[in-house]
Amino acid sequence: MSESSKIAQRFWELANKQPEKLAIQFGMPGQTEDFDFAKFWRRVERVTGHLQMTHALEVGQRVAWLGLNHELQLVSLVACARLGLIFMPLNFRLALPELQTVLQDAMPSILIHDEMHTEAANSLSKEGLPCCRLESLIHTSSPKHLALPVINEASDVLLVYTSGTTGLPKGAVHTQVGLLANAKASDEAHAFKATDIVLSTLPLFHVGGLCIQTLPALLKGVSVHLHPRFDAHAWLTDVSKGELAKRPTLSLLVPATMRAVLEHAQWVSADLKSLRGIMAGSSTLPLAYLETFHARGVPVGQIYGTTETGPVSVILKFQDAIQRMGFAGWPHAKLELQLTDSDGREVNQGAIGEVRVRGANLMRAYWRAAPQGGDEGLNDGWFCTGDMGYLDVDGCLQIVGRNKDMIISGGENIYPAEIENALATFPGLSECTVVGLPDERWGEVPVLVLVRASSVAGRQLTEAAVKTHLEAQIARFKLPRRVVFLDELPKSALGKVQKPILMKQISRH
Ligand code: AMP
Image (cartoon, rainbow, N blue to C red; front, side):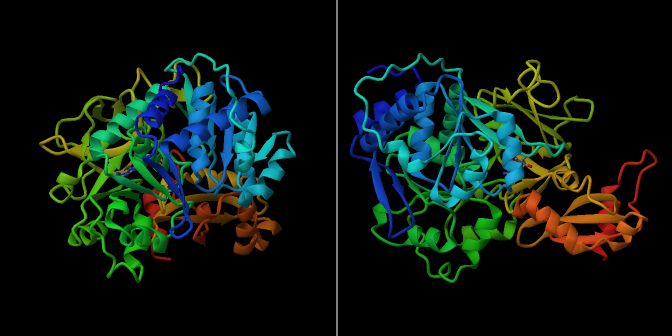
């Protein structure tokens, strides 16, 4: 057997080296199915055959996925790697028009979906996109001889969309070698052990859910418990019930899921002794949450990064978690990190600057980006994150804010422009803008500020009409939590909305 895809080669080796070791336990506690590394590989072979023979997919084509977390999602990613296809998991929280925008950009050749997303898939298939249910991937038996293409390690394998500053989503393209470099960085962060069990509950359509723990653990031969979606009760049950050696030792949480766990009735009595540590990220983390875990003997480390960086870039290991609580950590061994001022010059140690990173774990480019990259992509291999931070004397990074407008609500990114664009032609509006205000539960929430037009339509404009319009256009998590009407927006001399002043103004409202 020869696999030219390095990712596939790794799974083939694991299937031979440790065939009976659990690769994935899939499902909510009490309704799980186990897949050992041999079975996982057999499924990879079947899905490869299906994609190649039934759908005649060829190198470079995109395979979109719309569904809750599923073991076949990971199987399909490896099958895509073997065939030189680009796997493209979609954010199932997006509204239909948002999904359409992403699909028009990426032009996948097929959309694989679960039962829950049949209706959305049917609507999308009306536009000519072939769709299939995920179960059909394994209907055909494994072909004996597959004519696999030769895959270069630098070939693209994963396309993940992230909200863009302009309101248009951008696809970050990751290569096979990039995913492997990211997996190596994750191994450095976690120091995976053969006895580890990773509990994965965050959505695999984000690099956070897919590439911080899940894929790196599997590539290392470590077992994963995969839940279709996050549920605090299921998380606590998996962690605290059953034979100790079969319970998760590692998991990844974001502030919103952490809070759900801490507020759950089962938290106080849950037996957490199997946990070696929790990794957290996606936004700055409330210290009170970290302290609560630490008080129960569970260190919370951090991973800092973005969709474009794979994401594993800066890591706070468990052994440093308590001492450096609130810090993002240190760049991984192979990452270059700089903090720069607005002219792109490196700032002095201790001063605040924009975080720039360069390393093999970064994306190749944005999908359809000009070859030179430029400001919007990589510049000489560097990616400007838009996050502001400073380095402590020992090089430990603290993130202090963002120089971009982005709002992070419950771990999901929202760009004001996404909401503003959806209202661009709405009748009766003179102006609108969106700001993020702090929120105890979600970290931040979007607040929509509107100025009525002086026309009849303007006088008749209601909050309800605006909300109904937005509900059909954008994902639920992006919907403004508050709508404020003002007579005018505070502006600078150049006519730019002064958001800090506006935020003060509306927090008084
Ligand atoms: P995404 O591209 O969706 O992964 O979002 C990336 C953004 O999430 C970064 O630019 C940061 O603003 C934020 N972020 C991710 N991890 C952390 C972290 N550990 N601490 C603070 N902010 C983070």
